[in-house]
Image: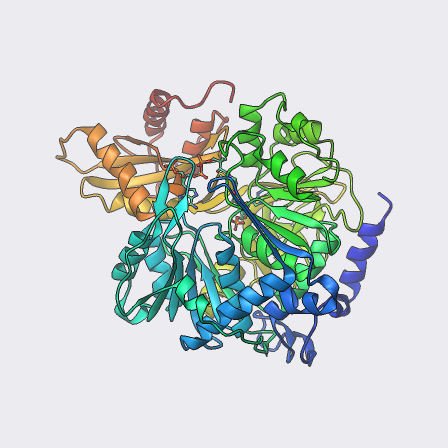
Length: 636
Ligand code: COA
Ligand code: AMP
């Protein structure tokens, strides 16, 4: 280590406000702040209080004005529709300004909420940026969620408008979005329903429109007039992004304008080491935080060319898909989830497809969303011959808590570790009583308040929920709900979640939410869902249900119904495909279901008999059931 990271980290620690004020010089403000950090309502903090700014202006207009007008801003690459479409900064600014004109002509104003339920098409990014241009607050909902999940988000956000498309395209099927949207609106509370829906008709599917409510994207754009960016307070919300919590009700993570702009700009240069003008690709989805931060906002704010990829790592058409995109568009940096690499490795273990492409401009691979297992990391390193960086963050933080800041200094990679805390984050490990733990001891990973710019200031219209969920366990600290340890070199190792969230193919899901669905089946008395290790997806959910006394239907039929229910109520993205009936669930004497112990049994990891277990024999019954399902898998 040459010490540059340490120097930068220490300079932040010595004077956090001066550090972020300096970083904020990269942003074009209408008016600068009165206070860098407003702590008057601590533990709720606000960054750049008193400043006014516009995120869309910083992502587009200023680059057009400052010499990047003809540089590519966005490249839409869609192997599933055989399309490549490129937008220069000028073209993207013009499209966004016109679509903002459409929104304004529909009466949309600063502070109004807009739900965006769209597949990976450029119009999704255009819709997000158009909202930002007007100061309207967007909330993008991932396409793989079912109507009921969308309805929950409609109820919370109360959108004035929903922007959607006729369909999304998966490898094996066209997903009709419009019937899901109509169903979600019907399921939602009457006072939360939108006045207007704008629908992008795609050639693959013509959606039927509801007279008086639904409007056609293309028709509206044909007559649209561009509008200018609207100055908003730095502390005004830019977007709400719902993420899984411990119950079926998702949390509305709020992102502000000013802090987010500064964090995006700083992280592009320092965390990812990307200079303006370079091509950056986050192979994720606009429905996730990675898509918000690093498909849309980060690269554009930093003056990069961003790739918006509507395809998969495999099957579109083969495991060389990523290498084709990298070479065709001259990508310097790729960010994706380890699961994508596990999928590629499984189909092309010897990297035959890698050899077919010129990857000479490719510099760094970043992985996040789940822990990167060392096997995958080594394979990627060997095949690509570039540094492979695991970094750790959450929807709540919006950017990396820990990483290897290649823009400052490439630190030695320790496979399995997310490397070191980024400036802004004072990461500590606490025991249950809130006492700091020693080097190497596993405990709750927390971040000392205040959180840095770009992190959530609160939950949407729910300050109390924010405090209860994140700040109450350890006063003065933000609880990440991840457990892990810090080693003697200051490297942070993320080991597991401390709640019932699981990560399925990099997608964050609540087992509590799935349990709520299972429990609503008329034959189910009680249930538990655990995340079990999966070679491809990292983890997959496994359901165990106890049937009500007297139910004597075919158990296989009930299991099929349960699987279908989760698909319909949460969505295909839950990948809920394995469930079994059990006679009883193991519990503590106080009635708490021992999910952790069941998970260890399923994963073939040794476990200690919990001291408080009510009836140890139940664990033998569970072990037998899991064995019947093939758990633990061989070799685990
Ligand atoms: N709209 C509708 N359905 C969707 C969807 C979307 N946007 N995205 C996924 N789905 C569906 C899939 O078709 C699949 O349905 P199925 O059960 O009928 O097969 C289901 O949701 C599960 O999808 P997924 O978890 O993506 O698994 P997969 O088997 O289709 O593909 C991978 C596996 C590894 C190739 C895939 O997960 C992948 O590309 N992951 C990349 C990681 C990533 O993007 N992570 C995001 C955070 S960085
Ligand atoms: P999400 O909010 O969907 O980004 O999910 C955040 C959660 O994913 C974190 O709290 C972790 O549990 C997990 N996660 C994300 N990145 C990593 C990583 N690099 N290593 C380990 N876990 C990770």
